[in-house]
Image (cartoon, rainbow, N blue to C red; front, side, top):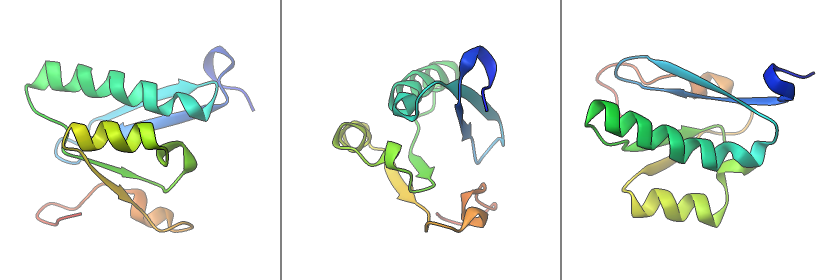
Length: 98
């Protein structure tokens, strides 16, 4: 199945605090890192706040040294949910810690 512009995949970023959602269509899953860096810069510039945590579905596109190093250098904690448990992929409830 193809999406916008011939893209086959998509990635969403959700702000747990505001519940705002961003959706990016991708031709390849390997673009997730590039899109995340662009999204982080845009969000931090617009809000004046820093991205502190990235929760992912344990997909391989998040499991590479370049991505891990970038998050570490920028103080972003990477949280991976247990494979096969999509219920863990939602936003955090108010007052709870990831």
